[in-house]
Image (cartoon, rainbow, N blue to C red; front, side, top):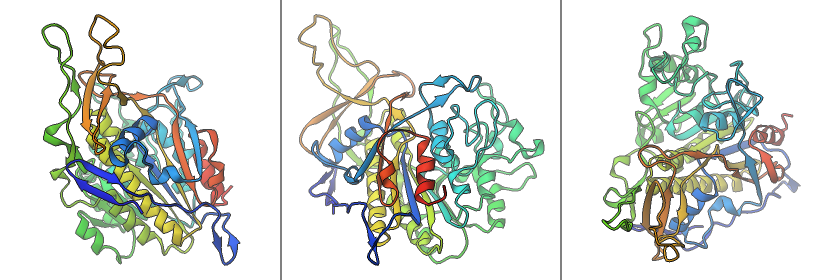
Length: 457
């Protein structure tokens, strides 16, 4: 078990959760087919983001629980051009990455479970596991790109609610997907009619919008049988409620659990009059008071597994730790570190569930890579050159619990959002069917790996 000491400096691991290997036995027999699948997606996770968080949370020799899994692969993140689907686009987004995992196809950026160029809807993993219960847990809005990829089919990821469908000056949006034009409606409308048994996350603002008939999406969800809860206490109280459950714990993306002390985040490097860089002041990570009484990712995952445990034919649960990506975009290392901690804690919940239910496959994957990375401060070459040496873009320096200072560079944009990258991403697996996760795979292969583990193909 990982023992964590919390405080202004964050957490330090003094032990590691030992995870049993994949050869589980039930009544004397090895479990070869999965009855249940828990698929975690760390949005924006690559080896850089894991190392940043690991150094702070567990120390430079620490290990996340999923890094102890017996099976690991590297996944190619593939994306194609919208106007020429035969040509690659070398950097994806959460919509194309989520769609690859959810459907097994390669599509263009911004598309949700539809083919590049044609817009043809493609069945998702949750739509192809007939008889099993299904669930989605996320720290983003439930209508955000990654979770939406498992339950909706639409041209553009930003068409989250009925009010978001019409074109803007910068985005063509989704007028063809309006119900009045023969479409399925916005992402929220599709979710309300999806029949997914459990949905927990943010996004209340998108459901609290009238559809084309003037009826709120929230009302449509209630009519479809969903019980709706808004806070942690209500989630606990809903434990024994029958029927599908929709938990909306924030207006959009949920606040992160951690922030930088004193508002600390990455900032452009300032220079002295002689051109020398001014060393940014380091800071620590502290709890975010704006998180409030919302359920954590760990609590939502535990609630979901408790609710789905009794499913007679098993279940498929998708769990997304969304703000690793969102806080990396914003140059907030403590936000993304805290969100990676939340991912690891949620995986630990699934591991404990798996120990009692060895017919459960656990996968930990990612939708795309991100550009924050650890850099030296001062530069390795500062003493070798006459001109000043310092990272471009923005830099944050963070006090680590080991007594060091870690410099994180957000080097792709000085004034706006940090970029994604086209790097490969890691995949970790444990349980029946996990042996297929090995070597170099395509991100879209995960769809087939899950279905084969469930003996569906």
